[in-house]
Image (cartoon, rainbow, N blue to C red):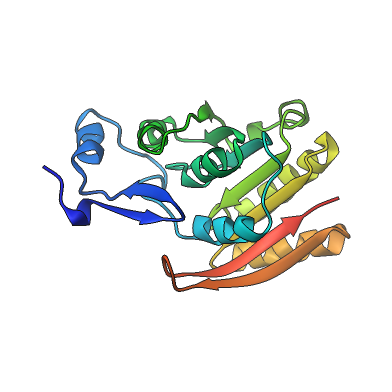
Length: 205
């Protein structure tokens, strides 16, 4: 039995809370995220808000790295008919992603991969690279900077990383702005449909 508190709607997506029976069932079946994929992170909403005014070309090849429950990729599949792959180091998040993809009427591919495993050859198959709340430790700053370098070499057309302005992200943004003419940082603050505050690092050719 579900209640009004078991789910919510934002940016046209149905989002299940941790109390929802289907989420609880997945956890009972042994799908326990081992890193940080135990819920949906609000920085994804900052990118969704940006995409409302800056839509993707239809059928773009999108990769959401560190996808967790994958709602950003699902949003792209639903609104832009994007061909989406969600990658995460923790394969245990994928059942939650597929559950949300199903209830929102789309399909998203999944791929277990750490940031370091995303090679130039793999990234050549990507048009747009997203990451939300992925730069939360100091040691991730150089890892993500090198990933961005590989993505640019591979010809990725747009890279967007969102964060609530933690210091590792701030350092990453500074390094990118110093290195790439096409890098910019914009602040975003949302009240509706959800509360979210932070910044977007946007890198384009």
